[in-house]
Length: 120
Image (tube, rainbow, N blue to C red; front, top):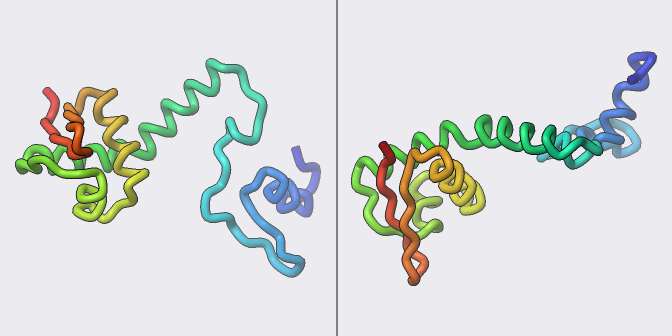
């Protein structure tokens, strides 16, 4: 814990939240997650991951449910990413989250296409 304000910025650099280029501090594009910086017990890491998934994917998963409800048909993750203006990695994460929460059923076909069905 910093004892003075002047120690806060170097701490944030050490935690990977800021960078320092010699003259000014800048924020990083993607700050590391707590479990990437700290040694935490397994149950705390699992809890953090669950909270982070809710924060990251809840809204996007709802969008994917809307796509499924509007008859999204068969499509690839790349097509779904283009349709939702998101990256493929984010689409895949949101699909996995929506499946775990039973918001969507995702049928994966051998040709790489997927079919979405809104959950109950």
